[in-house]
Length: 296
Image: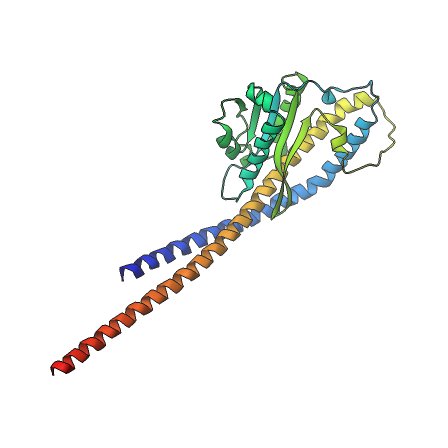
């Protein structure tokens, strides 16, 4: 009977866990709806800005240049790693971290070894993973930003990034984040933030527009590029935020289903054990009765 008691305790424990995961799934679904609305509203605007920037940059003469597309020898690098603050979202954070590790190993191995790679972490999970790497330098002012995500806070960071680049503090700035596709699918992305790369920005569009510029093209770009970069950075944050809630919803749904399967199997074991104990007791009673009859 002690075995039955242990099984009953396990069934109760699994049932409690199932209720928690079901509640977390509902919370994640609610947050996903709001996050998905934000990114789907932002994306067309962001893509159109990218198209405009692409056409403007591609129309520059080879002798013309703006501060934001100045290419230098890459000696110092800043990686902006965007993860979540919390876990329980499947392999979401692990896959973003994997993309960052691959980038360090394949693109910036020499800079990493020389200690010339700085990691700006947005989200605690990314920082917790990389903080033991003694070759990396860290900017930790914005680790908890995902909990209070807004365009104003995003703009402060993106303007800081632009200032770092213009001051030649870093020669290249890359974003590592998750692009939201749907609740079950995230695209783990490495994207060049600075210097601006027209070819990459215009990958989805081969059509070039013929613009009439007023004022001069270079002056216009100096004003327009920061606004577009602010929007692009905010889009990366919104993408990651929606991806996190989608991944968590799917993970909690899977956990709820697994708990349901485990509880069903435990109930089968419990009933089988209980039936075996009842049969054993009946046999003992029948055997005792038969022994009494023989004595009688």
